[in-house]
Length: 189
Image 1 (cartoon, rainbow, N blue to C red):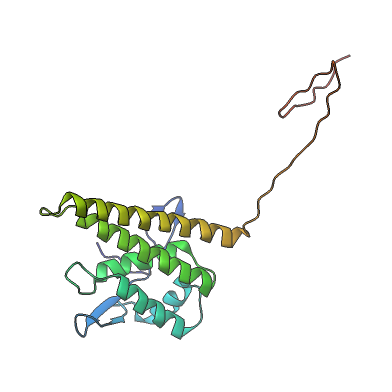
Image 2 (cartoon, one colour):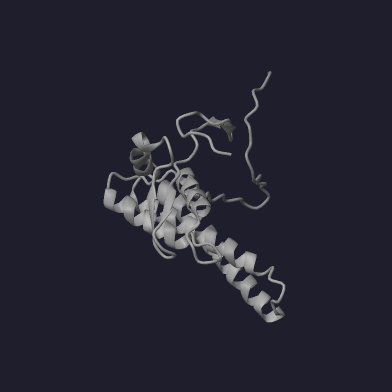
């Protein structure tokens, strides 16, 4: 299902959003590929890539695209256009505000792709119990790393500060204390 990037998509999570920026891949060989805009999207494509990665640096965009390519290999070793576009959608959904957040978002997308690739290898018909255990362990570590990256992004954006309020209450002999939130009632007297 292909929709042009300049038409609004249906409501997603209560918001109307444009479809994520996409790339087309020209394969030069099995290990290298050139990316270019999908048909009809050349006009705003580079601006949308810059915005998706939270940068104005062409070098940073190119470096990120190479990193996403490296992480988006198909099981047969070629570069998967589908995987690259899925990674770009994840990165754009993270809405990085600068290169630091974008680098973290690229890592998150690559970590997710790797975890899913490892999980897919657990379904191999000739896998031994030992290999399945190793793949399961690797997938668990990757998914834990992804969850940690999500938390790091949250802390980076919110300053990592916590608010803790500690109150001391002294109760003398024969007194009573109430713990919790209390509302003061108006007296009708």
